[in-house]
Image (cartoon, rainbow, N blue to C red; front, side, top):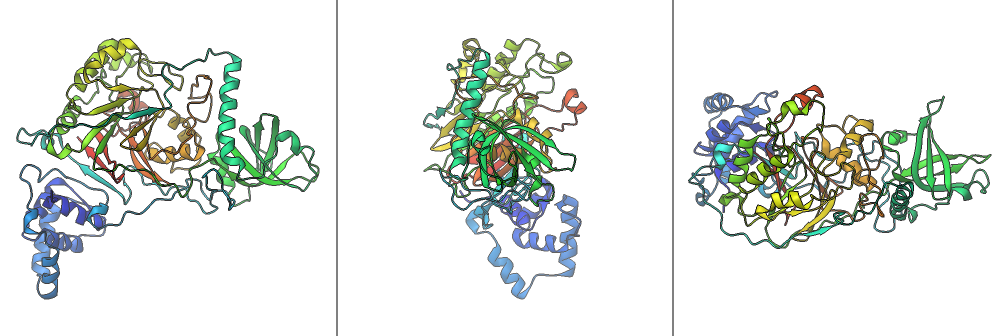
Length: 577
């Protein structure tokens, strides 16, 4: 189906770095030559105007018509840019797209592959990575992934209003028949930890062994006890878990690494141009440090730091047909601030022809508001019984087309244990939510849909990463940058303690063994879409308006957002309801 005129208008505007309100798009689309009208408006717009209102468009079109009439070569160019006759707007969908914040590669803007490493002036790397893991680059930048408010060049954001997607005249979609997704790394039914000291030793030893394998081929590492026997001035490397980070009296940084044989300190000098890598380090993550032993031994003067990381050459998998998945999170049914009208608009849109290719719905946790999650929460509850909250959520889920595949993981507001990994819901809750036959798996889990691996993680550790990171680029307003840090560490929750609760299991379910094609989180109630070394990053916002608690901690949520990913191209469109 050809694109409607408003869609082409939006794409022309965004290709020129302009946004526009819905009424402004409609005015431009109604012009005899919409593309030429866009050119006239953009050429006449003041430099400080980036989002065009309807009044702006009226004034600018009037000014342009009196000052620069189109003729000659300009008229020929405008005519060649005009849409073909068979691309007339669909009467039911002509106003669907109200705002776009980037160019769509299908409209001629080339999608640029993001190759980002979020470490500022990051560590130098070696030239012979193994296990498919590429060494870090010395010229890495803190943020090559796009932020949720200004989504990157390969992301299209379509903002739709509920009244435009729920009309009774909209064509209803036919039967979907998606193949069932595969679920991996699910702790549900496999939890064995008893909380004994030995259980914690087991899970951290497993973490060390699995992540150290990704680093050993890249550095000539030695066990910590062997370093004591090496002569001073020798080149050396350690692969270990970060046991301590502290500053010296001179302002340098002392990083103590621990392996299965003991601990050894490494000194990062403050005058090194990559020294701010310390801002990225978290306790309990596994890294490698290369350097030179002091003359008298006992300490390693660091020359570089390596993370397990994602290979720079990573090539994601894609579906072999056109099919889409909607990614949502943080529904929070039971809250007084649950945005029920927005959810209804989203569910109704899924029944329309426009959403025909959306065959999967991936829900990233916090289906309900829960009880006793934060101080005075009871004053903000619309439904005070947690089981009744799940019953109300189940009713909302019934509005989603019955032929879609739904996968859900729990979050910190759900009725499961807080310690991660979180198993899926118990049988009583599964029975309550059985109407749609959703697949319920643990947090985190890897969900493979149409050959595309989606790492689903609710995202509680994002609080830790944002709090500990030294860069303003890693913030609640750009949650995808924090997600990139987790990919770099190849672990969804590296730091034990603090905001994180970790359940000791026989293996560490939080390690990212295999690189995903898509990384989906929620929790922070902010929209963030980006890319890190060809892995798509999506934090999907929320369906809860700002609560009193959120206001007290300065969280302004992005509400009613549903990122939709084309599984055959991995392009992302953000729908807002």
